[in-house]
Image (cartoon, rainbow, N blue to C red):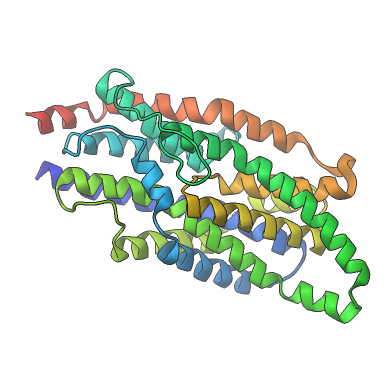
Length: 345
């Protein structure tokens, strides 16, 4: 009965966490379309919803495997309170960070909280898998952290190069062809939302697969279709709660965007998200999108960039990973320790 309680709790927390991600990431995906006036809000929400859900359903499981590889904990019920601590800490950290205006990444908080919960549960670092990073099969903490670090740099570089290429292309395009390119902005937004759904939802589903294995309700690492549909709907429905403040911050706070910047940013961000999803690299979509916007802006006029965004990304790195880890450890030791003791007995 206690195992079932924790499974229900973990799934409830996972849905809440995913929905809040959907609000945050849907707002980031929408930013360039809002800035370039490419779509009405209703059409934008529908495109993001469908693409996020499709990305979750068709996105594979490489990222989920990397999230599962963070843990060396045996596949037994005592893992369940740790996963509950990690998810609850991630939710609390994200809300707390926004309330006190500290930059936060849901991906950073989830990975940090998972590590913190595992350390609290074992009393040491023996249950943490360091793993490795390579371009084909990243794994463990090393693979996850390197992917998180490199992805914004790639977003910036690709955004910069794509803006330069598009600027040259626009010089030779007829006015009619240029208008058609702008009219296809919805397709680029859909690709970006697909990549976000593909990468981000796998992190949560990776923890859910761990939970079901620990509870003895399933074996193996494959993500069942019903789980993809459930988490995909939670992610997609977040688009209906788009944050106007976050959209405004990304659309106008990083750089004064025009259509050409929006196209360069969307293509760059989608490329980074989808490619990392294929190899299993977990990334922070909001940081990749911000970096891509900066890259496109810097290619045109570096002094027009609000470089404060870089400070916020750096602060997120310095604060979110250790902060979420500490919060998860506190929750585990104070709120869920009884669960481990009861499941052990």
